[in-house]
Length: 257
Figure: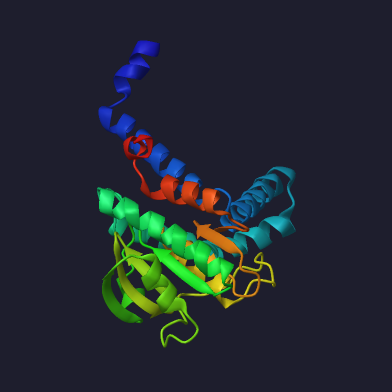
């Protein structure tokens, strides 16, 4: 009997199951730790209520839930919009190599760290975006386009209050500052503390839509905050910032060197 069942299974069936498993696994990784995970639990509860209403003969609840099913697809698109946009953007703009691979680009990381610490010590607000796999050309085009080597002095001069382009974000690609004064999308999440200003909301808003890495310096407190994947990490010191950038941009073999 068992042999007969195995004979009925085609290689296409195995491939189909593996493909669905991989897709579901990737989706769970994307929504892990985000508000979408809580929404997914809510949809699961709704599905359980639908099954129980059928089993227990709760006709009113069954009718209400059946009436809602027609809107479920639209609701999912609206609720999971940031995650869907980020996933599609990563798929469409995927690269085969990480942004930082050369020694010159590794030195740029140190320049970014030095600039962030100097800005924090002087309580100069800053918003530094480092591009990863998702192309940020739409945001670059809205700012003042540059093509300059990353350096501590350049970043300090851009964010100095007297600079005409100190407002907005600096976008870094590889070891080049490609744009400054860029405007980023603000997060609409209600979970973000009201103490955070526009810089923090813009930083986390961009990371909700792309895989970019963001460094935010508060002009009120001088604190350094990092953002990636829609998650903020506050009160970052130089050592933590270096580890954060290393984890995101340096290959394991380069980190060991």
